[in-house]
Image 1 (cartoon, helix red, strand yellow):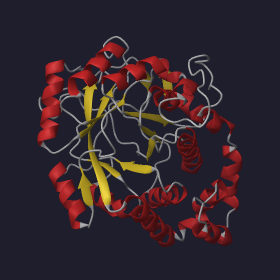
Image 2 (cartoon, one colour):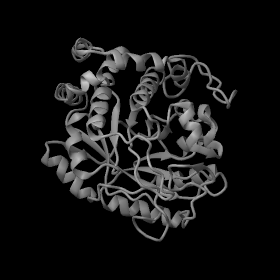
Image 3 (cartoon, one colour):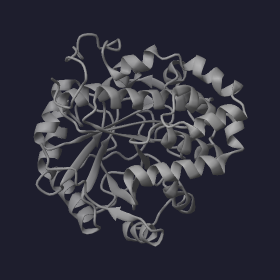
Image 4 (cartoon, one colour):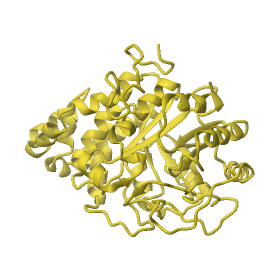
Length: 392
């Protein structure tokens, strides 16, 4: 059996890198009739919303109803159900984490990203000593879970470099995850053996035409290889899987919501020993001046967050410092289980600031201590370290 608990026999995840391998969560996403579910959103009425809110185990059709315009008028009812579900499944705890940027070097051209290769920005890759300084500064601020982030550069941010980064930090930091370019199963297994336990891969856009339009150059253009990366990570032994869609890239946020929810459910089903978390970052200003085609408003964002919590009661929901402080505070009771805090999105931003370009601008500039105080004031316990069990 695969080490992270698949319900089926192991699959050959490397056999067709230009296609989604059968027997994976990615294959389930591809097989889903997203367009058909999207049509249900448009036809859902008040009775459909009532049924979805009463459902003990909501279906994909119920989720479509919760995304409908009819449900938008019932936002308080959605919020109440989402809050009750979250407290019942997660208690009053919120996990705090920090992104630690290793490098902003990148060879891919992505229209929305500050690290894009065609942006003339100051580049930097941390040395092992600089990496340790960053981690120790974040530990001083309270963090015991770090997300290692880097641009896509197979030479400067190679698999060997990433393994060495994890190996360097593992004795210092109890919980490490990575959000880097996607790799094969063998590389993910090396990262796990070095001390990594989590993999975050945002699909960015589940709509294929939008994905192709915003990823112009580099290995990231391979939609299917990216979509199946969480399966490869789980096969390699990662126990935390994070996925998400970048809201504002595709014109139809409801279609993206259906796709990311489908992906999360498939991962939970196929890799049942893994913890699955969904993030819904909204586009922020970045180098290159990209403007989102269809920004997602606050009311729509709340509706989406609540609908996801109702459909996926056991899945974590993560919220970054892209969102303003007051809005983040208001969202915590509605289903959020993970928050970043005091974030820097440029390499060296915590211990050795430089002119290195950030990936995007943040909105919530509060310190980790201030975010923790907010949580305690709202009746929640800030959790600084994963307590599921010892590192593999």
